[in-house]
Amino acid sequence: MLVLGFQGSPRKKGNTHFLLSNFMRAAEKLGAQTQLIEVAKQNIVPCKELIVCEKKGYCPIDDDMKHEIYALLRQAEVVVLGTPIFFYNMTAQMKALVDRCQTFWARKYIFKLKDPARKMRRGFLLSVAATKGKNLFEGLELTTKYFFDAIDASFDGSLTYREI
Image (tube, rainbow, N blue to C red; front, side):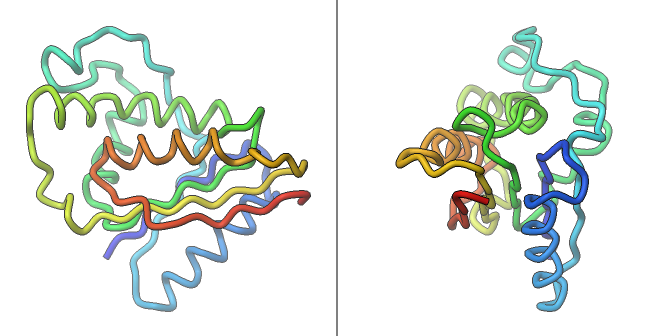
């Protein structure tokens, strides 16, 4: 089983890194193979709305999404997003990755292609925030749910922490 973790904080060794690293270590102890992607270190070009994904079923942008991340998302049985809150949502680096998964959405909803791993892929969200707003994680959770739907992963839960 591959557990794929996306570390969305641009800050090295911060709270998000600590939370996600502990999650990944626990998965390894349970026998999973894990891979952690430091999103801020990747070459991920933001979506340019070229519409190729909706017309041909793939993204033509030549970057780390094409050469590494798309394949890992297809292989993963568990996908974990770890991100701090930036203006009631994920970091820009993580949002670029999520937006580039429009190609999965197009393949699923326009081309009606079925991912063979769809019934087993699970998604989890880990997040920390400095403030304590009542609706602090609502925007992030909504974006995450739609991301997991696009990649054919169930949204199986979240651990979110305020005032960190």
